[in-house]
Image (cartoon, rainbow, N blue to C red):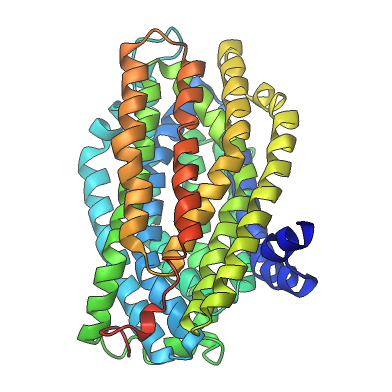
Length: 470
């Protein structure tokens, strides 16, 4: 019994060395990024509740943009990974071009939307039913923060296009180093611009936090772009990438068919998450502030399973591209088990330290207590989120983008959002109970995920399918 379990779910030393070789740089990069966001959030939280809430709301909007970029490059990234696994660098080049077009389109639309609709978008999250905070001030701070953050949309999109293409080749160290330099810069500038430095730099508050973030994005973008073009031997897809705007029709068709559902899924899922946050926000500004505190530490602990899920798309995608379906399924089982196991450990640690975290903030005691409850609930649901996240990347690695669309965004909009809206607006349940019930809808998603992974229907080589070969 044990031997059968071990052979199915536990890999050998070489397997874990390969996974960790990919995962550790990604985890370190995101850990540093999340830690700086964590410190950034604390610094803004020292200014006041309204400032923290305004920034938190804008960061929800930025989250939608970031995920849309991620979805836009991921559709072509499925092909880029499998093309690389096949040794077809021309095909990977066409996938890179598709990412450039998609990133430009998304960034352009976001600039228009944020530029003309900032007041309306931020106001969606402001409700005067609570007893704490001034929503007019929160709106003003949010608009100031968003105005500066818009400058960083294009460099962020460009850096994600290059980073995703670099990772397709199995190189995760360079994006990590670029991220480290960027976040250290962000951290130093955050302190200087938010609080000021004597007579040299004035205290700029939330605007200073935005300037620091935008500067870091330009630095990260410059590093990955310059490195890619200076190391063409490691990135053969970049040779001639800008000489022609063309993408062969059969590859373009394949990416559209497989990639469009994935891109729409990421957009709808991200917007769905912001709608759920807005459902909670109707309970008052204190809920917005408490959830901001909770999500800051939750994001810090979530990085392990988020990046291990991303590794599934690389490892399994390359194996599928090479036609090794049996090896792909075996690797997938072991990586899912490893990810969930790591997440259980992280959840326990989060429960232990999470009670002390809100005390750092300069805000009302009621907000701190509410944040502690949110942190505990988020820790309890983390292992479930880990499994469903791995399921998503398993399906995506084989090009099952329609299924991922149903599994992720349709599930969110059809079940989770109506449930959150009803509980928040039409019941007298405490916000803690509402948050608990909404978060644990993840159980249904896990049950569906177990069935889909076990079926093996996701195991397919999409770059050898008709109409997608270069």
